[in-house]
Image 1: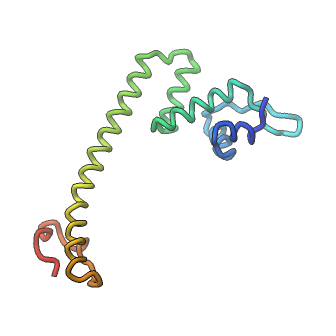
Image 2: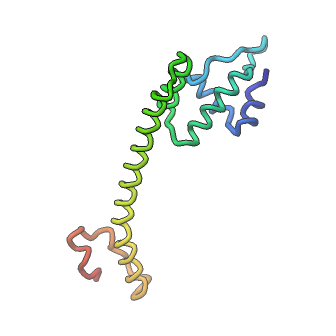
Image 3: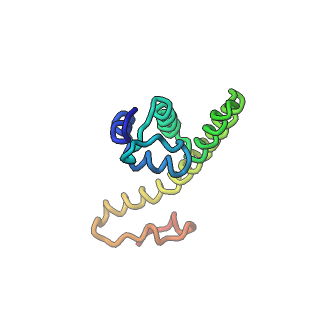
Length: 140
């Protein structure tokens, strides 16, 4: 049995994160000493490790909670996990598309800033104030 500080060190977590996970129901309330200190057994540590691993894969706490509920009910089948991970991959792909579109919008502005820097680096920059249809017009 380990106290929260040791568990936090082992898993690279802040103790407050562990308290938060307990508060939102990701982990069950651990046993306590007579003095009220939380004591974590190996199953608690394994569950926390699972949460840390799932977070490192980009899963949100809500998604992790859903997976843990299935796991606790012994109904976390490969099909159930596949469905959730596939949805996550699709979400990531959509985020990538959105970020690429944002990058595509920013690059011309960056190029206009660079061109303005070459002419007069101390001039007030109005690149962000220009309307999209004005993007190809002079910045003067």
